[in-house]
Length: 293
Length: 233
Image 1 (cartoon, rainbow over the protein chains, first blue to last red):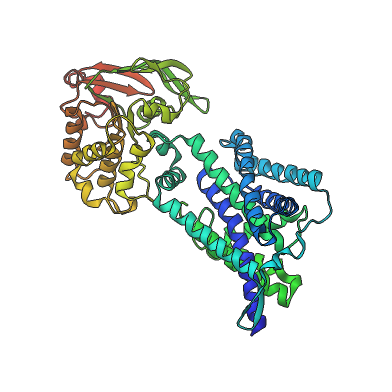
Image 2 (spheres, rainbow over the protein chains, first blue to last red; image 1 turned 60 degrees about the horizontal axis):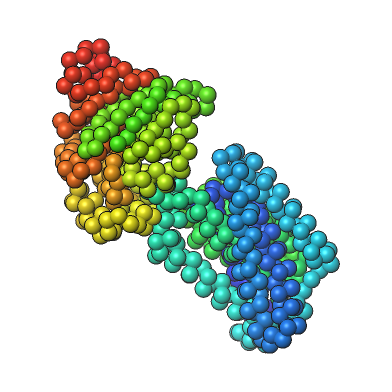
């Protein structure tokens, strides 16, 4: 029993991180119609900056239990990367999808080199810091409280994102632009500005995901590409452009991976991509495909 | 108010508009009549800034529109209701109407603009909370025009406002358009059917294969057999 709870909780933890990155991918695709592979690099960047932010602020005298603030601050501070990459992508909005994919993949490779240049190639971690919140006993299984906090934060972000997109004027403008860009412009929507804002939102979701995951793992330069492979599975299962799809897809991929790692680690990706193929055959648009945002 | 002078537009190297010139004055209702594919929609899309001009100029209220992004053209006061209505299905009817009051604040207060839009097509008010997808084709046309009106425009571009409407709903749309002109807006309307040209039309242009082949009063075109043959009078 405690084993099952262990696996489930670690799956949900992975899913909550995966959801953040996939949500960024979805909101950018929904509005800009670009499949942004660089979401994985934003995640990696968030992880590295997260470790550095924690190390600096602890050295500067931040009390250990407040390290989460340094992580969130580091993740949010990376928002400035969004407008820069968006400016680069602006050159291919009207081009073929192949060009867009190539360019976002180029960004992935460049950002991977940037992280190696700045942080080196050795793994990088915050040590056992995340245990400073202690462990909780849930149904006979012990989990780090930090993991529960991250799951809670991700749920809050999901709810907040949903509210912003459905209940605010900005969210309605974003959904209108996602649905019909030309018509939105004819009603006075400054498309350039909406694109930058949405892309920056997507960027921050990725960097926050990376910053929040890092206490429980180690930053390595390939982590961005590894995550893209998973996020890709999430959006294909959930449906491209759909927020609910990102949520359900992340849960499916996160929990299944945890189950596979606990039972047959060698078939982890095989299992997930079998499901991806299954979804593509039965429901090519994904579980929630067709929704605008 | 709006002046097109010798406008040429090409889409993927094929010439769609050739030396199109037309004019819409204050409070005028101008109809651009032509068969499908004649260049009516392209003309309206060129005015909205979706298409680049190869030659010629478009002026609105004395300003050259060339090179302006679409949202700035809208902000100058041109409301656009496209052929397919282009309702945002994900938003409610009320949100569809209100969106331009958020993107273009200033001018008349938002509630007044929304009220005017609903007053033009009163039936829409009862649907305000419905999603855009739950509307019939005729209701979408009305919503599309009402939405353009809420922008508080000086001029409206209507692309085939009567296309595909059931005869039962045509009078409601006609009444709405009449209300719009009474409120002092100018209208440039594209139509493929000469019989849909409203009586309040002050000027009429006939377009064929991207060229203006007739410009004058509606009464005169009805006496021109060569033009009537083309637009199926």
